[in-house]
Every structure is written in structure tokens, then in C-alpha cells.
Image 1 (tube, rainbow, N blue to C red):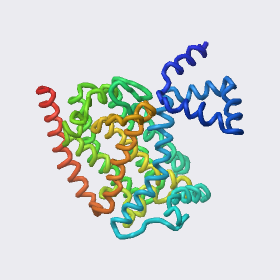
Image 2: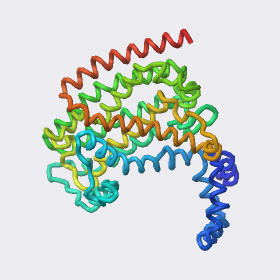
Image 3: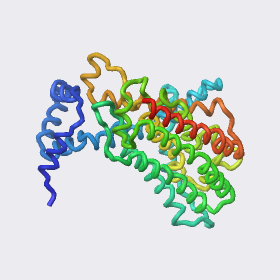
Image 4: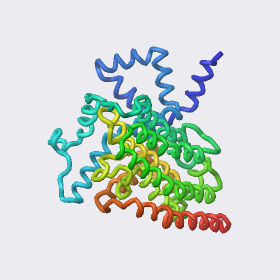
Amino acid sequence: MIDISGLVNLMIAEQVNIPLLYPIIYNFVLKIPVIGNIVAFLLGIPIIRYLIAFILWKPIFILLIIPGFGTLGTMLLVLPWLERKLVGRMQWRVGPREIAPRTRGSIQLLADSLRFLCQEVIIHKEAHKPYFLQFPFLYFLPVLLPLLFINAGTIGRTLVPIESEYALQLMIALISLMPVFILGVGWSSNNRFAFIGTVREAFMYFAYEIPFIIAILAMVILYGTSNTVGVVSAQTSWWNWGIILNPLAALTFFVAAVMATARLPFEIPEADQELAFGPFIEYSGIAFGLAYVMAYEKMYVLSAIMTMLFLGAGSGPAIPYVTPLLGDLYYAILFVIKTLIILLVMVNLRGVYPRYRLDQGLRIGWGAMLTLGLIAVAWSIVLGVVL
């Protein structure tokens, strides 16, 4: 039998600390004439109170609201617009503004999403039909699951859904599954251009995966733990952040993250001018929409991991009156801001660098990145001995 009362007590004992939340509800919302009566009635229903307690339970709040799925969904709506606008400014263009010109095209992605939902998903006769539809949806699982182990808190304020001594290893394993589904997407399309994109994805996967793992290994050696709680606790102040202690590992991780998301200048597997979206060339409708947002999902997850490993997660200066009112939410917001900065740097690369050829990308992965990663490991060992 499940102990419901014990579970409820556990959720209440581990509520996310947001002191500002209760004054807003009791001093503002409940005093609104009609809405206040409805809210008061709903709060009197036991199941509603249990649901609120469940949402405010720290692991669920972090996973579902911030910096988890809710923030990820917001990023998927905002980031493509920011990318188009910023790159447009860099190239002396205005960017998207056809949809709702007064908002400067800020709802462009919402319009694109509605278009994807209304379009027909066409399955050509040469495709492997069961796998053709399954792989884009299965791709979401390894992309989203690393969010279970990301610690968005700071010292003394742990904000992680699942704490594990092997958190970094689990995240690496889940991230390593991402290219497998892309290979499945290209294979199931049964198209020569999709196959070429798939082969390129396989080559790039082997080029960036080893330096990516080595960069994380360097930080595990430096922090002395692979538990994300210990990783954040080791970054006691900004001069102890991973990017300060081991900038080579941070650079290697960042370049590997750009490669892993197939962003310019490493848009080699897709290559619109040559392969017309590479492995995803045969997809349309919502299946193409999923393929479109996958890159942004991977960008957010990898940027969040970089924030946790190298930028102190949610640590930052305390602001008088603001920090005490927001509590745990303040540190989660700092985490999202740092992650957004990394994302903006990633998306701006497409306005600065042209796309590399496959041989150039492989040379960077197996040459410069691998060398930097090994030097970063040696540097972490030296720091571990000194410190």
C-alpha cells in the first residue's frame, strides 16, 4: 500500500522556497472580487491543495517549471526568434516581421508550429514506414532525460530533481544516444541525400564525442565527484568556477556542444545548400517540426550542463530585497540567464562563420579538440595535486 499521508508530508517538507508566492496569493489574488472567490473555493478542495503541493515539491518544480520543461518550452518559442533577429542585425537585415509586424515577428515560431500541425505527414512509398514515424518521436527521450540530473542551485540550495553519485555519467550516456536516433531517421527515410547526411552525422559523432567526454572527465577530476550537487558545491565563488579553473575544458565542451547540435559552422550533416536538411529531407508536417526543434532542445540541455559545470550553476550576487523575496526561484532564474547567454553565443556563430567541410570538421574534432581535451585533463590533475 502506498502511504499517501507520508508522501504528502514529504512533498510539504521539501517545498521550493519562494517567499513572494504566498503574499501574492493572499494579499493580491484573493482580494480580486470574482477571481478571489474562485481561487478561495479551489484552495478549499483537498485534491487541489495536493496538486499545488505536488507542483511546488522541489524535484517536480525544478523538472516541470524552471529550469525544466516549462523553461525549455519557452526557449523553443523565443530562441529561434532571437536567433533570426540577432543574425539579421549582424547581416544588416531586420529579421522576421511578416507575422504580427507590430510585435516584430515575435510570434513567428507560433505561426510555424500551427503550420506544422496542420500539414500532412507524407510517407513516401520507399520509406520504412514504422521506423520512419517512430524515430523522430523517440528522439525526444534522450534529449529531455538529462534534465533529471541538472542542478540549478547553488551552495546550500540544491535544485536537482534526482541526485545521484553517477549523474554526469548518466547524462553522458543519454546524450550519446542522440545521434543513434538521427542515424535511424536517415536510414528509415531510404533516400540518398538522407543517407549522405546520416553518414556525415556518424563521422561527426565520432569526432566530437571523445573530446566531449574528455572535457567532462577533466571537470570530474577537478571537482573530485560526478554528483551534480558536489559539482556545484565545489564552485564556491566566481573565481572557483570551472571556466576560470580550466578554460581549456570549457572551450572543448563548448565546441563539442556546437558540433553535437549541428549548428553553424558545423551544420555538416544537414547542409541545406547541398542536402536540403540532410537526414530529415523526407519529413513534413509535425514530424518535420519535431526535427526542427530538436536542435534547439539539444542546445538548451547542453548549455544547461555547461552552466552547471563551468559557470557555477545558479550562483551569483545576492540582490537586496529581491533575493529574499524570490528565494530558490532567484537562483534558478540566474541559472536560466547564464544558460541563455551561452545559447545566444551559439546562435550568433551562424552570422560569423561559414560552414566547414566534412574533412575540416573531422580535423578539428580529432586534432585540435582532442589535444585541448587531453591538456585540460592534465591541467585538472595538476590543479588537483596543488589544491
